[in-house]
Image (cartoon, helix red, strand yellow):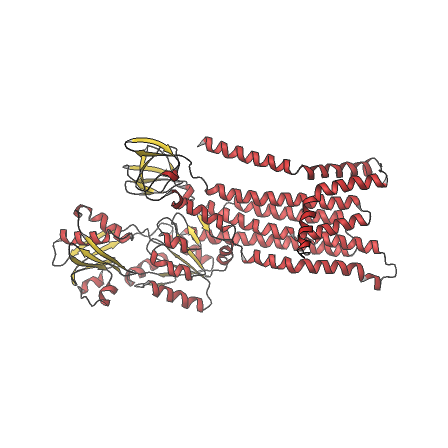
Length: 636
């Protein structure tokens, strides 16, 4: 692993060296400007007119070649209202009135500002990528009783891979060793060691902390959760927020207005001033053009969102776009699923009550059918009944969304589900079932009631803390669950949730959220199961629990919480609010300074030097303010 980091650092160092080399013309222009200013003001030495012009033109072209080239290219496409054309006009104008040093200074410092901005954006993107792109290039696979090293993309599903102590897991799979301890920070944002037992899912990016472990591969390299997470974060930087889109539209309107005002600043005083001086008012209009450049806004805002996405990723939260950060700041109600979201989703069978059938046969039929589902309740029943599971013939398994499963087991029609499903199919069951406080799974065989099981789940340790924090942020809470009303009411009461509704099908959840949105509420919905995908897609912000969540739900969601901790929802809102605060700080800073210097320039109280220093200075301050987001520590 040290070798990989060394290579990465070496490549990063090479990139920085190349960056300096590629900017040698700009650095040369800066050197010429400093020398000329030192000769003029330090030693009171002045070159003859023609030589001075040649030296400053060389410096100007060295500093502004790329800017001028872009300005000309855009002008040929009739695009005159952009910062490149604006800077070119302002600097050529400075030369036209004999202000050579100022014209060069404007171009040099503008180009330096652009360099810093480009470097900051590239660094933000690189940091986001480096945060997650930690997939190993080599994996040890066991083939024909021998171990060999290969690239993870060459490993197939169901092959066995070995992970040595201190090594990163390259592929998602099931642990087949007795147990293993892993650092899960790459996936969850938490570095606390996590001990996994045989049969547990191990995800790419985790680090094996102690003994040699073996994992049976469950997904291809490109389909691993870490690969998908990396893809999501890379895509996120391309999705613009409403603020970014507004500023882009604003810049397109703002720039032509600035050109018009600069032109009016030259022309209108002719009609009102007795001592009109074209050169004086033309100079003022140049100051006006320089300070009005919108680059500080255009660059620092996306940079702020990059920082926010990076900070969220560092805390185990994935925003799939800057636009979802904006919406997250507007959320006034969080609606949550229960199982796997607020509760651990790790169920244990509490009671087995067969009717007419022996317990062993009852469990065999139920577990055989439930073995075809990945629902936490199904997993609990299958695990509990493992000793009763010889080879059985399973046919025609179908899922009743939000209800249960049905199928043919050893020639018998078996139905496993909730009370709603039994009511729907008119299958009578023992009324005592309705008095059970725990979750109940009803069973019928050949259309006859055959008994039930009770399942108990455990509330997540940070669930109550999450609800309290949301209420403190003036965000209402609601729980929607497919579980029965008595169980849902118990959990809601325990956690302090505002409203709770149970016995809901996926379409019922959709209807509830639709009604809330019609009332003007801004909804974030948090869920993890396939049945939550429709309502996650409907919500203003759909949030998926990425650890236990289904692939469909994760792909549908706008935000993914990687470690299934409910409190990460509070963290996500805090990150979004912090990011928006920093972005608006940058907007206020840039606009405030620009308006002030614009007024001073129009009044003849600011020079081109002050204009360029103010412009570049504001841009750099905005950049520094934006990049600090990713390094911030959030309160627990």
